[in-house]
Image 1: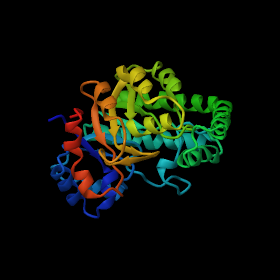
Image 2 (image 1 turned 90 degrees about the vertical axis):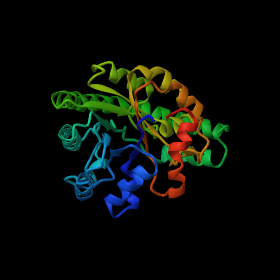
Image 3 (image 1 turned 60 degrees about the vertical axis):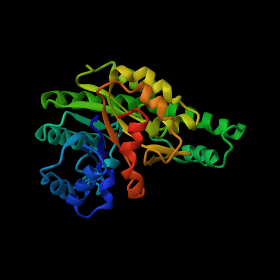
Length: 301
């Protein structure tokens, strides 16, 4: 069977990491992706388990406190606050070094966001949830969001590129490959054109693309880039994929519980990509237990 990983997002259900790893194998998964759900304490406990096999690490890992007392995952690599941007780079460098120490090949990361009023997108999503996504009000709200992002995003793209240039050098020297993930919110960076632009500045063996199926689907459903365009445009740079299902515009459902077009995914995943199920800890264990067999039935494994 193809290797299939379960993100430690699921581990938030557990107080005992041994029990988590036992369930990983019992459910049919072969590997674990370490992600930002892990604190230094839970990471240390997990790494003592000899049976553990790690497919990838999602930065920042561990997710420690920032200098402002917030979680490291709240820091942006595209921040215009230079202190924040540098601290985000430092946490990511620590994750790269962890990957190198553990002989893990890939670190997944988020590139940041444009600093917009979050209510602009929340308003759009609320209208989608009300079933009025075909209305003029929805289109007007979408145009307002697009214009606001367009006005604000350029300096954030420059900051993200500055961060990634530094991180790419650190990754190369540590024998680690970076994978930029597509994001769920429209205000986040990069959109599809920005992803292609950023990746063009780096060698594929140093920086590649990580496809999140739920994020792409939600952006498509709210009127932005169609899901298949991400797959077509970035297939040649794809390193890995986050697999989870979508109900409406709610993602991180166990695969099989939503209405994602799994045939689209199966037909467009390049051979050899790292496959990680990123399943919210609120899902029922019985639903997570059936994920591997579901993905096999869809030709993804």
